[in-house]
Length: 580
Ligand code: VG1
Ligand code: CO
Image (cartoon, rainbow, N blue to C red; front, side, top):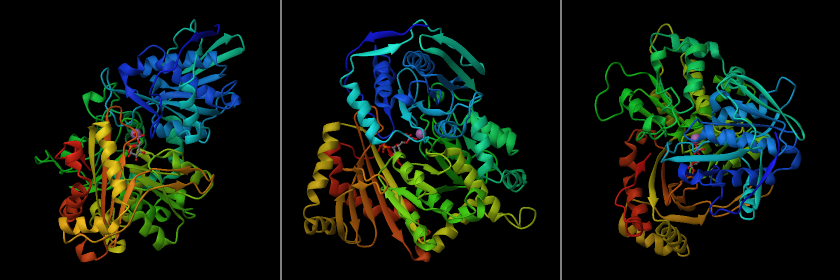
C-alpha cells in the first residue's frame, strides 16, 4: 500500500469526556470526523507508541464499529503502526481490551502499546443513536487527562491526516493474520478470539471449581442478562462452557449492533427482563425466581447484582467484595493493598477500610483515576456507584469479574452447606454486612438531556449558596425539621497522590452533621444537552434501623435536595429521568 496525506480542518466539539468521545452516529459519519480524532490521538502519543508498535482496535460491536475499524486500520498503516490486533468481528469488551493490552503476547513476541476502544458504553446504539471512541494506554487503562487534553488540543489545530486508501478492507470475521507491505515495511492485521485471553486471566483470579460446584447445585439458580451487548460473547464461554451454568440462564446474550433497540444500561429501569425474572418487576414473574441475577452494559464494564427479589446497590457491592475478598477470592489471598471509590459513591467502602485497616482513596468520577493508584501498588479493589466494580487485575472496571466475585463469595459462604442445610443468599450476605458495618441508604436521580445553560445555572447557584452555610441551614430547616445541618460544603478537588496532578470542579458536595451527603454533578458521558446527577446518601449505624425501604428512608433528604437546588425551577422537570 501507499501512504496518502489528506487535507483536513478542525471540527468543533471533539473534547473527550469522562470516558472518551461520545456522539451520535450521524456526527461520527461526517467527513473527516473520525479521521481527525484518530490522527489527533496518534499525534498525542510518543512516537514509539505508534511507529513500529502493535495496537488493539475493537469494541462493543455497536452500529458503525465495522466501518470505523476499517478506517482506523488504514490510518494505523499509514501512521507507521506495525500491527493492529482485532477481536473477531471487532468484538472486545472494555475489560477484555485492558486484559489484552496487559497480557496478550503475539506469535512473534509482540505486546500492544495501546488500544482504540469503540464504544459508547451504556448509551443506545443504531443509526440514530450513539457511537464512541477512546484510547487506552500501555497499562491497559484509559488515557490520563494530560493525554486527552493533548488530543483535544490537536483536534483544534489539525490540518491533515494519513491514510492508506488503497489498503483493502480486512475480513475481521475470520481468525488469522493478514500481511501487507507498505513504504516502511510490513503491516499486519491479526484477528484473534475475543474471549481467550480474558478467560485465561479470570482463571488465574478465581477458583472456578468452587464456583462450578455452586452453579451446579440444585439449590442454586442463576440468570445473566447481557442486554445484547458484548458481554454475551464472554458469558457463554465463562458461565456455560467453563462453569456449567445452563444455557437457559443467559438472556439477551447475542451481541447486536443496536442492542435489540434497548438501552444497554444495567439498572432497575433498563434491565427490564432480568428485573422481572428476579421478582423485582411490577408484574409477578413467570416460573421460579433465580437465587442470583446479574446484568452488564454495552461494553461489559458495568454490572448489576441482584438476589432473589433483592437489589444490591453498587456502593454496597464494592464494600461487600472488599470485606470478603481475602477469604473468597484466591487472587487476593495475601491481602488487599488498599481500596478506592469515586467521590459520589457511598461511604460503605470507607467503613470496611477503617475496620480492616486498609489504605483508602476517594477519587473523582471516572475509572482513569484508579489506574495511577493501582500502578503504584496502592489499591486492589475499587468501585463506583454507577454500577462499576473492579480490581487491579486490569485497569478498567469489569462487569464479568464482579459477577465472578459475587459467585465466589456465595460459593465461600455456602461451602459447608452446598449439599445439606439452607443456602446463604445474596440478601443474607447484604443484611449481614449492614449488621456489621451499618447501612448507607443511597439513591441517584438523573435528569437527562436538560438544557445545558439551565444546568450550568443550577450548578452555579449551588456553588454560590456554599458561601453562607447559616443561610443554607436556615433554608433546610424551613424545608424539613428532620434533616440535620450542613457542616461543610465545597466543590470536590482531587490531587493525585502518585503524580501530583490536580483535577478541579469534580462535583458539588453538601456534607451533613449526621454523615449524610448530597452531591451534584454534570455528566461527562452524554451526547446531547446536559445530564444532572444528584446523589443522596444517609448513614444508619443502628442495626435495628437498617431494614427500611431506601426511597422512604431518604425521602426527607430528597426533599431538601430538590428544593435547595431549585431543580424544577431551573430545569422545568418535576421528576428525574432515571432513579437508581
Ligand atoms: C458515568 C458514570 C461514571 C462512569 C462513566 C463511564 O460518567 O457516572 O461513574 O465512570 O459513566 O462509564 P458521567 O460523567 O456520565 O457521570 V461507562 O460504562 O460509560 O465507560
Ligand atoms: Co460501560
